[in-house]
Amino acid sequence: MAMALAVLDARQRGLDRFLGGTLAFASIDDRTAYRRVLQQGLAELEAVLVKDQLL
Image (cartoon, rainbow, N blue to C red):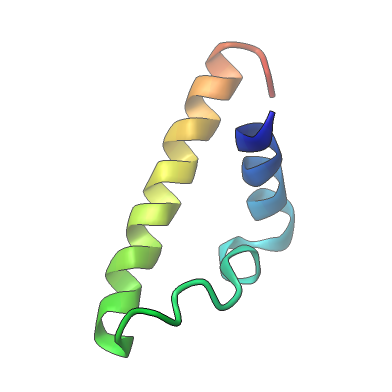
């Protein structure tokens, strides 16, 4: 359930608003890489949830 809510929230608000300040721990140079990993992870979760007809 939490994964589905995260995917839907990121889809609705956009990834940057979904993440908010969570990447503040990373240096500015590394944030793009962390953002990309999170974006890919959410896309993978969404694919599984859609395949299992949970979204």
